[in-house]
Length: 215
Image (tube, rainbow, N blue to C red):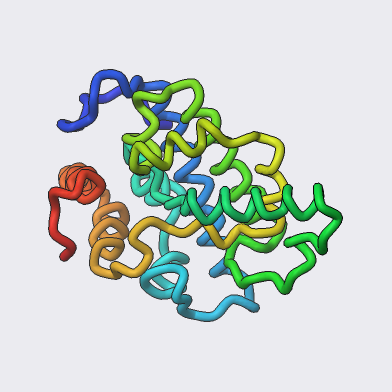
């Protein structure tokens, strides 16, 4: 899976192939969770949390999901400020014997079930690890501004599991409200249009850098 191939223009040299494989693997895991969510009878045919329809996601076979996942940045967005704020509130509640944040009514999140929640935890642990061990590459591969990566570096790892269990709503599919963006990527992946996928990945890099208008 994901054999060596020419680097996409715009990927810095400090982002090595092993890190790219890790990102692609995490992306694939998240895409599989989305497809599984849409494969259950309890899931609506369309969700505000994901673009397109259930049929669009169900139509993806394993090879198409791998092609979608093959991006040099996380296809899932972490709201770092919100996540760390909730972790800090929980720690303060525990220290002061006040009612725990986890006892409050839970906010809805598509990642709340056991398997999706495990993915949310994996994303957060990965982001924390990359922010600490690969600080130069972290903003690029995580799709986060430098100040968010710095906040992850200052955070404690102890609250990560609690956060994934109690408040997974901080995780979202990147550009989840841009249906045309995701339709182009899904169609290119289904058609095995590798040129189109590379062009689309470049658009994503430009968007993350703030140089591409939303279309």
